[in-house]
Image (cartoon, rainbow, N blue to C red; front, side, top):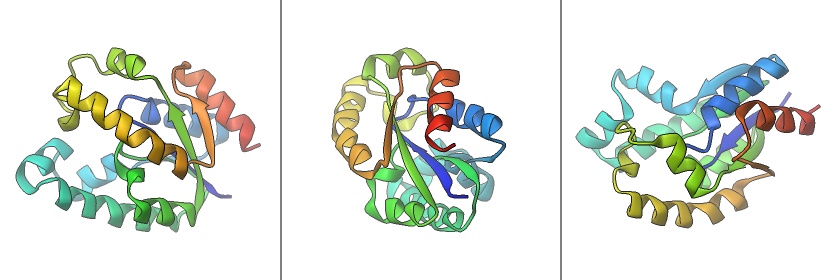
Length: 163
């Protein structure tokens, strides 16, 4: 069975919805950011600080290529992963992409003052990034789900698509 790949802006619910979806569908859950942190032995924020975003994006691409060969998984991608065509192409080889389309207001409410998100430390810049990325998510997506829904409802809606 094809993988189900979740994309969307940070705070859109990819990890929470992904874990719920994996439970509902009896699939393995994979979080690309967690994979990178495990492989590197440090947090993503530390990778950004010490090696920069370009280095992180290379690690992210390697993970996307690696997991494209897996089957029957629910995959949560980092917020910027599917803004790069090479990652979209790699992940589409093994799955379908679902965009969790949450409003910026919902995302802000979910993130709060979380300091572990390096690209969200300045709200104005985060909003600009959100606006820039939205079209990329839409063009990458095979399906679009309302990201403002509860995790359970969003997961059930996605599961219904893939029955």
